[in-house]
Amino acid sequence: MKIINLLLPLSLLMGWCCAAAQTIPYEIEPVKAPFEMTSLLRPSFPDRSMSIAKCGAREGKMSTAAIQRTIDRMSEKGGGTVIVPAGKWLTGRITLRSNICLRLEKGAELHFSGDIKDYLPVVLARNEGIDVYSLGAMIYADGAENIAVSGEGKLVGPEYDCEICQRQEGGISEEVGKMPLDRRVYDGSNGEKVFLPVFFGPVNSRNILVEGVTFEHSIFWNIVPTYCENIIIRGVTVSSFGRGRTDGIDIDSSVNALIEYTTLDCGDDCFTLKSGRGIDGVRRARPTENVVIRNCRVKRGVGGITLGTETAAGIRNVYMHDCVMEHPSFPFYIKTRRPRGGGAENILVERVEIENSRKTVFKFDMLGSVEWLGSVAERYPAPAVGELTPRFRNMTFRDITVKACPALINAKGLPEQPIEGLVFENIKSPDMTMQLQDVGTLVFK
Figure 1 (cartoon, helix red, strand yellow):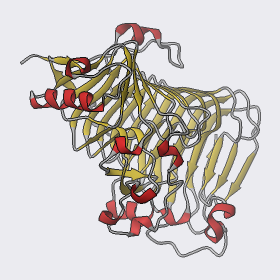
Figure 2 (tube, rainbow, N blue to C red):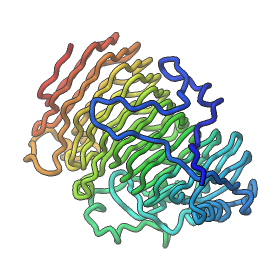
Figure 3 (cartoon, rainbow, N blue to C red):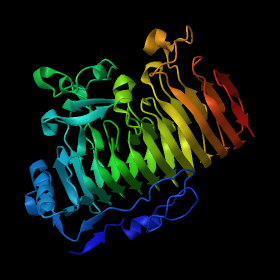
Figure 4 (cartoon, rainbow, N blue to C red):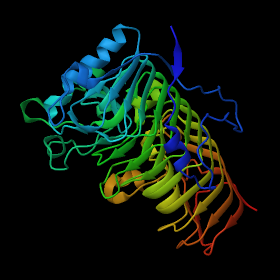
C-alpha cells in the first residue's frame, strides 16, 4: 500500500507571508527549542480518497449522515482522505476516526448547525478546564491517531441567535469538578442548558494536523486539542473578532505542539495554553508541555499569547519566537485565580514585534476581580499555600519591540506565592511604565 503525505497546497503555502516576510516552507522545519521535544512529523494517510458527494451529501441540504458515512467507510478500509468539494455543505457534529484526513478543497464551505439535536448524543469534552459530557465539538475525535483537517476551504459556525447559543450555560463552576463524572451530563433535555461546542476539539488523540483551513464565525473556542499529543497547526486562519469567548487556539493538557504560519483575529484570547481547573484538573494531572509558536501573526484579540486562567496541572516548556502582533489588548497575558492550582514555568518569548498594544503589554494577574470572584480575589488575608495555590516562575521575554502602548508591565502576584524569576531583556517601548505587586524576583536588562 502506498503511503503519501498530504501537504498544504503549494499556492497557499507560497502566498502566505509571516512576520519576517518569509514564505511558508513546503516541508516542516525541525523544531529548535530550549527544551527537549520529540520530533513532530506530519501524519501519513493511505493513498485513497472519497468525496462526501459520493456518499449522498448534497449542497444546501443537511448532510451530517452522509459525511459521517464517508468517514466511517474510509476508516473501515484502513483510512484515507475524505474530500469536501467546492460548494456549501451543511452538517452537524462529525467525528474523525484514526487515519482519516478531512480535506476541504478550494471553494468548499462546511457550515455547521446551531441546533442541539445535531450534536447528540453527548460526548466527553472539557469546558473551561472541567470535564463534562455535553455537545463536545463540531469536528470531534476521541482516542484517534493520525488525523487531519486540511485544505483551502472554510469551516463556518452557526448564527449567533441559534438554539445552542440561546440555551448555553454561560460558565462553569469548580463545584461541577467535584461531582462524579457520570453526573456531569448536559444534553439540553427538559429545556436545560448546554455547554457550547468548540469548533475542532479532539480529545485523547495523537498525531494531529490542522493545515491551511479557515475557521469563521465561531460561537466558542476554535481549535482545542485536549489530552492530546503530537500536534501540528500551520497555515491556519481564524476569524472570530467581534464575538466574545472565541479563543483562537487552546492547547489544553496536551504535549508536543507546533503552531506556525498561523493568523488569529479573535474575540477573546489568541494563542492560549491551559491545563485544567481546580481540583478536577489537579487530580487529572495532565500538564501542557513542550509548545512552540513561531512565525505567527495576531491581528486582534484580548491576549496575544495567554497562559491560563486554567492552569491546574501546570504549563511548562513554552517557546514563542519571530511573531507579529497588530492590535491585541494584552500581547502577553498570564493569569489564574487562587483556587485553580498549578501555574506555569520555563517560558521563553523572543523576537516579537507589537504594532499597538491597546492595554498593558505584559499583564500578569493572579488575583482576578473582586466584582466577579468575591473575597477570594482580595489580597489579604493571604491563605496558606496548598495544592490549589498557583505558582508562576522562570519566564523570559527578550528582543521585544513595541511601537505603541499605554503601559509596559502590570504584574499582580499572590502574597502567599509571589511571581518569581521574571526576566526582561532588550525591551523597546515608547512607554516603560511598570506596576508590580507580589513579585519576588525581576531582572530588567
